[in-house]
Each structure stands twice: as C-alpha cells, then as structure tokens.
Image (cartoon, rainbow, N blue to C red):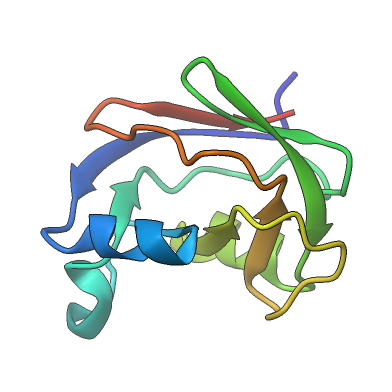
Length: 118
C-alpha cells in the first residue's frame, strides 16, 4: 500500500520556472494567490504513515529515491497538499516542508500525472 498518492489537477502558469532550481512545488487547490502560479495543484489526500529517506516518490513511471524529509513535510502534504520537492540528493532537509530526492532529471508533469510515495 502506498504511503501517499495523488493526481495533478492544474499547473500554474509559472510552475516550470523552478525546474532551473531543480525543484517543484505541490499545493492543493487552495494555494495562496501569491504562490498559485508557481505550483502544481494536486488532490489533497491522507498520508498513511511517515515519509522516510529510502522511500520512493513516483511521477507516473519515473521513480526517485527520497534522500531527506523535512519535519513538517508529511503534515503539510496531508493538510494542505503542500510540499516542495528538491531534486538535489541532499541528505538533510534544507527547510521543514521540503522532501529531497536523488539528483536526477526532473519528471515531465502534466495534468493527470499520478504521484505516489512508497
């Protein structure tokens, strides 16, 4: 059973700008107006257990190993659908709401992309 799963429902007009920073921002439909254009909106779903280093985040068929998890990342994901995912391989979270994954090319994300954490 997945720890978490969701689907991308909308892509902000400026969301791709953060690809240069090797990061994506996920947010539920209630993203603050100041962030909405920069987010990939997702369905807000329950997180079934802790998110831990060594787990896998999958974007459709692209899988990434989790390397670090901020202390409020799972809570924010469950309550707001909000998390920043950084593709830099850090083994310590830079910010409390960030999940770091291995430093690979970012996935192509479109409306309908399925995201899961296992």
